[in-house]
Image (cartoon, rainbow, N blue to C red; front, side, top):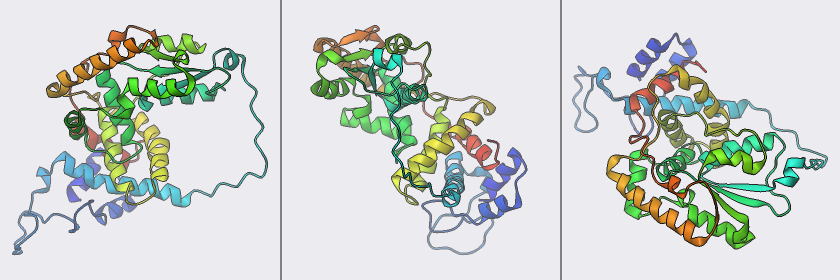
Length: 331
């Protein structure tokens, strides 16, 4: 923790209470409070060897920072007043004209669809309605797969990106959130194939829904996702899943969005080169399955093929910089 404190002090001044909390915090997954320092002459027959704090990896320091950041989030739950129960029924909202003219359900990777759904609901465009159309939003499969992992970093425990994509290749499946034919089949079985349409170009979605503009994915970098992931690992053993999701999505995500422009050299989550051929094979199979099934298509089906825009995962040094900025209260 001494090295983490040193780096925190280079980020900005720290409150004494923050320093005390940092020095009394134990890193996750380790029985000893801290690694022994280089120069310690105590004889040990087991345990880690003494280390020079300046040689600790960014990954090790990020894990240590995650404990205090999780504590910060949990403290907001303990101080939040309990909501007063409603004693009256909520009046049903009147349907907007666009709601009646463009009834919809938007499905697909939540990392892509959830920001859009939240904005539509904010405008009074609730999903559903008589004869609604199910729009399955897709895109380059490498980006859709990355979105599946990115969403999970804010909602559940998940392995690091490089392990997640390696395991997916070993299983031969990217999972339900990145399987567009499976999503389309599920909805077709419930509402009929004629009401399920595939959107491969997000730029076409506003016209289909009768709006001028729609937001893109949240402006979170690969490193921001890694920060959320390691904090989520701590929260998962400290609180229930619903509270964990509320804290990460509702509180941590907006803070990260404010910090992202302040820390340069952000990365996107990308499929590593050794897995790209396999992802392309999966993408061609998904494209062919959707075309052969006869769904209405909006956009070129070849847009489902990998873009190859990003080919690496988070930079742990930048992830640590984001975590230090959070600890310093820069957001």
